[in-house]
Image 1 (cartoon, one colour):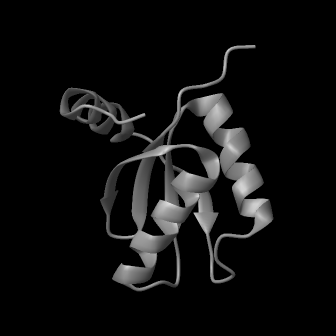
Image 2 (tube, one colour):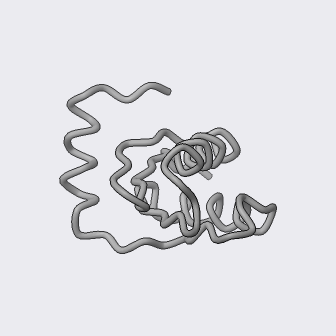
Length: 91
């Protein structure tokens, strides 16, 4: 699922007022974090995550790994905050 630039622009606008829902800490991307990301994405679809205690290159890798693990798409990453999106599954 590749997002178009128009979709990304819309999501950045909507995501501006959001607060980070999940924090990836010093332990990295654990199973508990992946499970919480999955649950939060199902509920919110668009959410911010905070990455603590990682350098620039490591943050990029963590964001990519988190998106891959949850089937999400990275919309934007600024500093230690990333905005990700995944369409909720229809029940």
